[in-house]
Length: 242
Image 1 (spheres, rainbow, N blue to C red):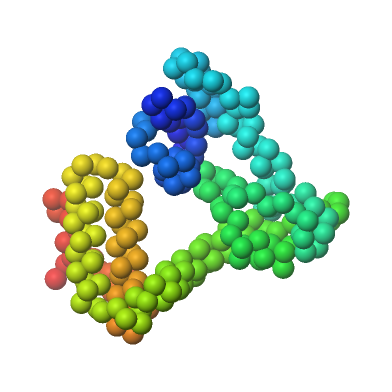
Image 2 (tube, rainbow, N blue to C red):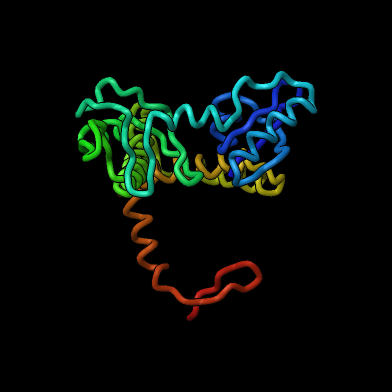
């Protein structure tokens, strides 16, 4: 999904990720969504139209042109991603921050860049290098899943939480974050909902570590149980069969 957003008195822009671009990167929480569509061409045209309507300076390039400048570093098909580079280790390849595949943003983390350097193959048609798209996307998901909890644990260790922390205080912190989530839900404040859920996951990761278990194992254990449950939805809640 592509969003045309308005930061009052500042700008009108277009993005596929409001949280990442507007809130995290630009630092604005006071914004409104003026238009949304799955069509990048439609979103690009609407952005320029609304910039004129609201009397903001029009962008020199459309949103689509900006995105395509990133994608032009690649040949992307349903089967493969071919890098516009001939070096086997892609040492001179200028990786962008991310690419968008089927409206999914793929961030080029340090680990994913290294994986591309280690797993590319020379094309049969030219000297360019490629990776299989399906494997690439799976690798991204594996890297993301495997590193985020490790990053949280490393952060907690550096802050002294794991060495000097206490499970009881982490539990109290969990209740505090749950209260923040409840408030955000009542206010229908999407950015705060996202922040609160993220904070809860961080606290649970630390709490699990302090108890000598990994949150990944806790989640897997829970899934093994709920995966076999049967039941039905009653008043918006899943009620398991006895």
